[in-house]
Length: 129
Image (tube, rainbow, N blue to C red; front, side, top):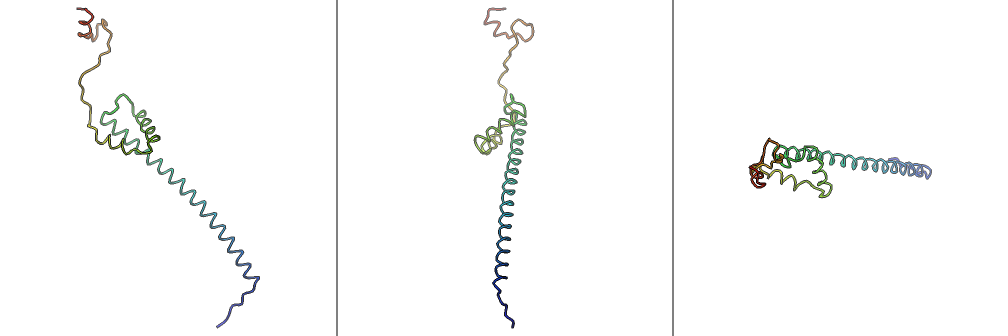
């Protein structure tokens, strides 16, 4: 069996090379962790954007917030996400909402006397025959 002699010069060279390799690995690991965090953030933003658009689409299908167009619904939901930090409540509310809206009447904003769509009740109240 042969023995390995440890020359102090060789030990110093190996130790210094090992330290340099460890420094490079630490730097590379830090870079990978930073990139990983950035990618997770982008993925979460993409997932949230997809969820916001799905909720807005479901709202469109169900006739919810009919006074808003699709882009306005998306903006409103995104604003809620910024303040609340989650879309769970909005998503559940939209899922639970009934499809379509029940109409109980119509608000008529035609001008009286225009000849089109005169409101009989308003004419009666104003004393017009």
